[in-house]
Length: 312
Image (tube, rainbow, N blue to C red; front, side, top):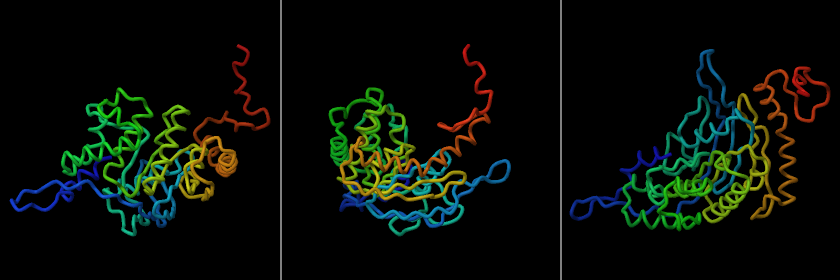
């Protein structure tokens, strides 16, 4: 997560003062969201049999400040797209651009929040948030001011001195979001950040992310398997097909904000999106299960081996 910060640390130092001593840069100014473009992107990786096609001809345009959810079954390349945008991978074919500039590698303008909060266990919450700023050479006072601002934004200032093991899963994820925002990126990439949380905590954090996005207007690309979560959060839901990953459909979510998870309009749209992607989900289930698998709700006797052991 911090490879980009470390690699750019030198560029964040101010010019030497009159005495010839370099002074740390001030805290970064508020940065607006940036546009993203994937232009006919394909990605293949080698394996023992030759190559595996991960993505095929993916084109996606995200305007600055837009909240886009990538939705699809396992193997549809959602996380791979995040890695390409982050500059952690390069496409085999095509171009990835942010703010009209080709992505050549990791950069300060992009940050990632993973499913696992990945906070450093030996650092307090405050020190975790300040860590990327410290790598860039920011002064202690600037780091302290920025960490307080962000921890207050995610409602964790009271716990600034706590260590990760002293926090709940939801609190750790909020801390990870604060740390990702520390360098004020234009693009926030979120890879199933709430997948490991219970339903109630997940719903609370969905509201938190919506609130943070409304306040900062960062460009957010959010990966999820949860249809209702995607519809609740996104301006646009991009449905991905699998093996190889490709864009099947884009659904504009034209519902007022803030949105509630139990909103009837969210439920109705989520049901429609779920129907669109049901065949891809079933395709993955068939490929990953044995020949005794039967689709939920399917009629007929199915494979007789499914009855073995019944009544014991």
